[in-house]
Length: 167
Ligand SMILES: CC(C)(COP(=O)(O)OP(=O)(O)OC[C@H]1O[C@@H](n2cnc3c(N)ncnc32)[C@H](O)[C@@H]1OP(=O)(O)O)[C@@H](O)C(=O)NCCC(=O)NCCS
Image (tube, rainbow, N blue to C red; front, side):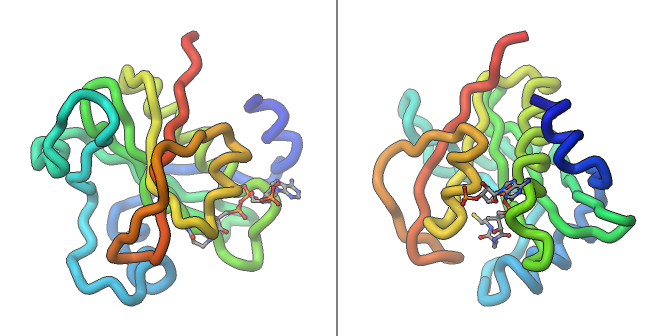
């Protein structure tokens, strides 16, 4: 799969970025109307296995990874991720510059996020995309779980999961 995306996006590079870099983009582009503080992690848990508390502050102890997609040395997309349990990994805060959408930037960011989840020993990747962003997730292979819910940052979001292939 990686080689396919390399061919599609030979000029694209995915690199780790600092939290401050992604925070600025989240604040101005992704969550401009958000009133709560933007943090490096989300304490939300995957609610569909076992009976977890909806919030787990221990999640902040896992390392978070912040990724940037660069085309011609321009930062055109971001995503982040971190474990929420030892086996589960959250993909959070994907955003792609409108001028660079619909050319696979999000797919590359998901691929590298999935890779990081695998490196950290996880079995599944999950997220809560907006309805409007869902097609980019399902194209990657995420599947929806449950119904749409209302969140602080969007009218309609839905849980999605992606089972990481075993190597
Ligand atoms: C959601 C979002 C991240 C998707 O980013 P993207 O880089 O445009 O997504 P991709 O290009 O990977 O895939 C999206 C579409 O492009 C198409 N596409 C992917 N690679 C392509 C290529 N090489 N050539 C043409 N089209 C391509 C996909 O088929 C998909 O189209 P479809 O939905 O009609 O099937 C972007 O629209 C965005 O930033 N939205 C605003 C912020 C947001 O809502 N973020 C999510 C918060 S939950």
